[in-house]
Length: 117
Image 1 (cartoon, rainbow, N blue to C red):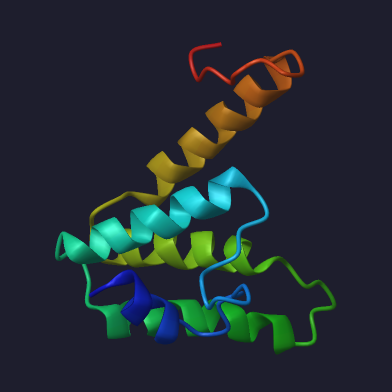
Image 2: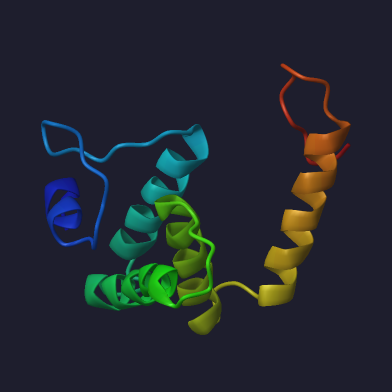
């Protein structure tokens, strides 16, 4: 699948005037690229990805009152598809999130975040 194919077949993907994906933070571009790489490595079919992302996006309309960003949904869908296929473990992902949050809080502004802090 090409980037163009991925862009055209991804639900509600924010696009710029030229039809390319729009990212508001570096992590969004990274998770987008990781998803494409995982697909290209054969970890999941694109229709599976679209179903997972679509299910996450649909949660904004569940009446819960909170609307999260598009790439927050993307990240959640990516984690769920990886865990569902046994590629990643939910508890490991949770531990990594906790470690990154702690490292970010311990990092002075403007310095790179290091996980070993």
